[in-house]
Length: 457
Image (cartoon, rainbow, N blue to C red; front, side, top):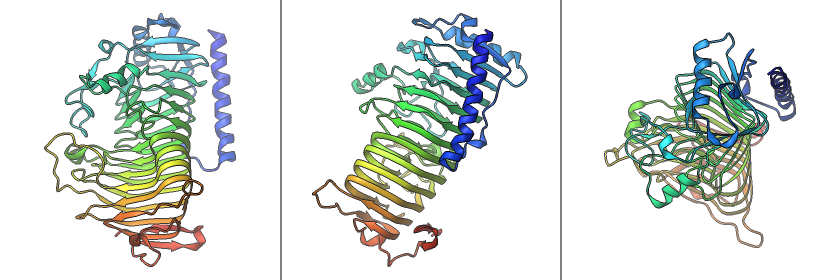
């Protein structure tokens, strides 16, 4: 016991030092909103009968270990240590003031038996399961109403074994909406770092109705053809920091959401204060996305220093009629993309509806979108910006954007409708609605490195 406790202590100290050095080496960070906590009290999953042979089901061991943390309430919280090995398990709930620590070589592997996955209620801001009406499968790691929760380690792995779920989706045999790998609800003070997530059945990391969340130094992997395996989806959450991670999945790398049509409008909880920084990845869908579920509103999002390869769409802001909600003050800057189908897309006709009761007159408002300092190679379509006739997008401000097609091919043109704003130093030349002579929604600042700031329209 003392041996692995000492190993944890040294690793946590090393992680803290590396995090402090990275601030100096890499520049700005938002990770200070949730500091790493050292736990004096430590237990191992082996103490509760955990067996890391890849075959034994460990759900009972995880539940008993977390029950111990929850009810003994040690001062400063408790660390649950997962040593090297493969621990097959069904879903389990986390608790407050705990650290789930995966050692090098540790794998928490989800059972592929759907009967081991409990059902939970649909989210109130969605009104139903995202894929099927009614309840939904509980996430592998789940929590509701928690505070001070850390998931970290020595780059151990959480493996969702999602292929059985993906096949059910393809064959249309799903009875309920697929489970996420991690879903934390109504929680605060969450830190997820130094863990590999792979093969999620559905979205990977889903903080919903949360505040003060840091996700940093994670790797998220899924095959390119795996359906809806979004990397990180902050949803109706605030003060979220996503940094220094690699994501290669079958859907959006990072997608900021806030509820679905009439249910999201009624729940009325926006996502705001979201920072996304130093993300590298690839996907047949979007790199940095807002939406399409934005009915509670999405405001004050900053995404910068993003590197994207083999993408469907580099930057995608998406909504639809019936969504309602406001998308405002979104800034994306310092983006490099290579081999993308579309560089930038802002559209009001994306996404499905939960049922026929959505209000087609609930139109989203999109304004104050700033995209600057973007360089793209092998980008087939530079940009598409399509607002809504009865709710045009305004204050769309583009600056210092160069999106090149394949060598020897002619650069594609931008396509726009129902939009106003400005474009400065954009190549290929943008659509007429966004020319430098029409800057009614934007102010150009040469001293700020050519960036443009949208004024409320």
